[in-house]
Length: 527
Image (tube, rainbow, N blue to C red; front, side, top):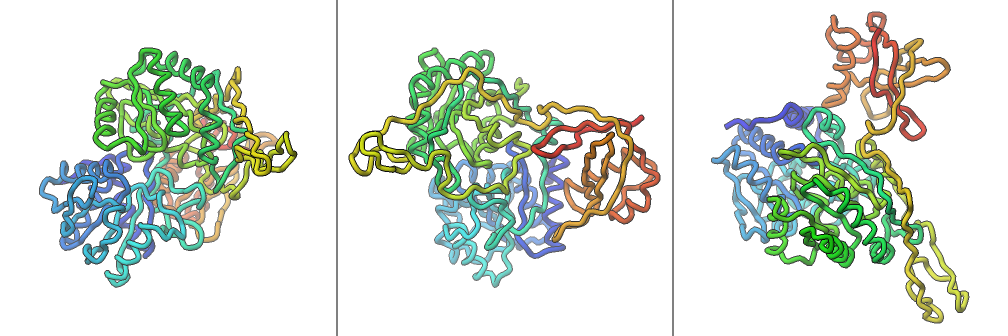
């Protein structure tokens, strides 16, 4: 039975096989939350076994819900698939299955029981860090040795970066070497495969100015102390309830376990059904809460650090961020919980009380390469008012006289930032084009591209057209060419494009949008 794929899903599967025809590394496939990674995993698995019937494939992830989801996506489309599960949480140990879906916590010590394996597919690959000596890396090292160094590994993720490691495929000691395929979240929204996310200005804003950082992220206990304040919770919840009128499924991200429970209690005071899920919630209770939420019997769920990856509730149409973060990946994953399509759902409203949109920018333009030095923070020290001893900013009691410092002050601002969640929500402007130039652009280690520079009076705006790349960049280059030279086949190289530049139609105007200190071209007009 052939698995039905959307065009971009089919291209993603093709890109993996094309990659292995040309390279020997471990590629990544980057698909936004809600675009069907489990279906792509199933199609990739089926094709591999169809082409090479004795292939053994292992799909590994960290969460039992994802293990079950990926397994079911395969057997629904291919009922006779020789597939099994190895997971303590699911009470199954089908170690000898040809296609094995496993939890890393259950299988990481059993590489020698797995024995022969040709291909490992890792879902939520952003949970692996460079130089990581943990379960994944040790398991893969053993498995590769058992298989004479011939093991192939493919990572799947919506966010190909980590807070403390930058991009997953860059840097020393990385496990992944390249991105084989990537499709932008904005394209998926514009093509109707994902739900739009809509920002709304809030009156309440969390102030984390006195919270220190460690490893590039807010210190958890200090963050919760700053955020979990009764008056702030009441103000934020009042806004959530007001904006949530007419919306059916609310998901609230909180800064700690106690905070999640306090927010839940405040929401209940408004007569709204609400439950809390944390890492301490027993599995049967958690399953019951989430099943009720997905079925629409429960209107709101608050959570602390557990529903950021692998949680699939398509009907979610309101997300409230009460969890400030410096992690680009966490920010994108939280907002991504609202991008799935559902019947009767037009969009997902995002209420960002935490300033994350201002901190990181639109989710389709985040920069996973940014890193912050460990131990940074806006207030690294504070002075005891009793004995004048200098203490670290995170100290709750003076190290000299045991004076108890008051918790950081949290302000309720009259006008919190309502920054764009998508780049298209940033105001763009049209510029008349007075001239266009074309040039070869080269970057070490990357295929060359065509640099197109538009002259708009005294201003210059550039874009890069990637004819020699693969996947989405190539698709975008072909589309670019067809608008300018519909009578000619798209070139395969930059040199070919430059030889034909005289026949290209010149836009009369371009639409540009500010992106930091640069601009991005978002649309063109032809006379």
